[in-house]
Image 1 (tube, rainbow over the protein chains, first blue to last red):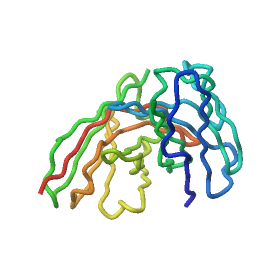
Image 2 (cartoon, chains in turn orange, green; image 1 turned 180 degrees about the vertical axis):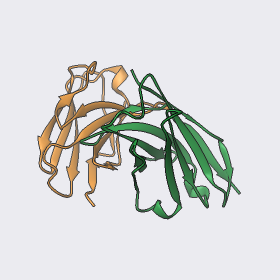
Image 3 (cartoon, each protein chain N blue to C red; image 1 turned 90 degrees about the vertical axis):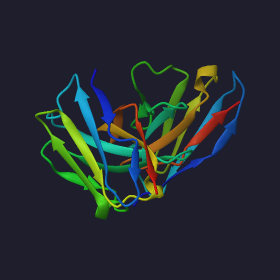
Length: 102
Length: 119
């Protein structure tokens, strides 16, 4: 089974910061990677699919990149609404999550 | 926009069967190309995919739950259901139903329902 590993587990940042979250796959997954945002008490929301394709309505400050085994989610200028937990996902496997906190 | 809604008891006794239903609205579960999934989240933890069912009835389960798990579909009611037998406290979690497309992305989620297993 392919394992997905995110880093860091927790990230402390301030409004306006550029934030980068990394997700590594244990095998080559081409660009078959998605990113989700989950806020407390809410279901996850799909942000990005196929490594870099943003879903409709996702702010342009969110971007994804990578292929093969290493991927990144970048928030170019962190906004108050972005404090949440982010998950990467490939196939039926999720990363363990990265909590972005103040 | 397709909407998913979970329903079922919030409390299940240990060793009993956990049963949940997901009702799909504003869309047909019989539309091919989607994998109707269950995902759970233990308190304070990450996301664990449980399994999926296709509208034809074909299923695929997480190997760690396969021996206790059954997912079924009722296309006439636009619902799919989860049965997890012999539950323990380790099955206490927030359970989500979700729609998956291929390649696998979970594009639509229910709001989730909390299930607590009590002794």
